Image 1 (tube, rainbow, N blue to C red):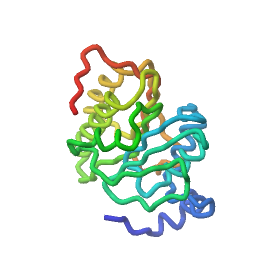
Image 2 (cartoon, rainbow, N blue to C red):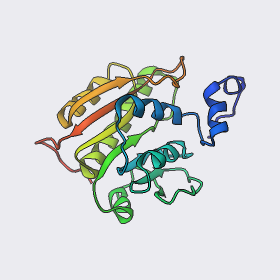
Image 3 (tube, one colour):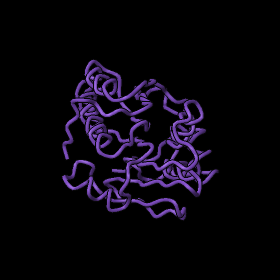
Image 4 (tube, rainbow, N blue to C red):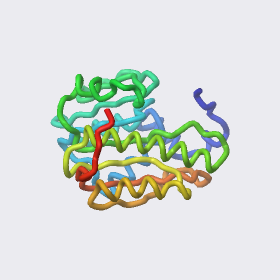
Length: 210
């Protein structure tokens, strides 16, 4: 369900800046902030963007990787086509059994970077929402085991809570380093964080689930 834009949106400087600059969502400024701070996405990179609708992150990634790069966006909701020639999109649930084959039908090599701004449906019950976020991000990490190249980077959105420690355990097994970051464009009332993971290394006990 699309959230109606209320008074909070009309007073939001990032919302108006996104409209002025032609970006499809204010969330693009979270990724811009992350990439300026950590240089996760570079020119020429091949990037997989999960939860890509409505396409704001795709627009920025397309610019960041340039004409020699490529970005594939996936979302359960249809993404309005972009004019950028280095962008493809797929309408699909990341939990579908054939998701790997579908992705490889578009790009059959491993990606340099995977980004995910996916958020679980919010119930309003904090512990439940944290658990849902962890389970969703475990799926993203499963996909990374199948699709991210050795040495590649990963960006995921999560919520802070006791159960999040399970997520950090998986990350430590797979990445050389990670940083926790709250972009300036994140709303003050939001408890979201972004985990930026560097230098993917397949874990010795890794089991491909797909």
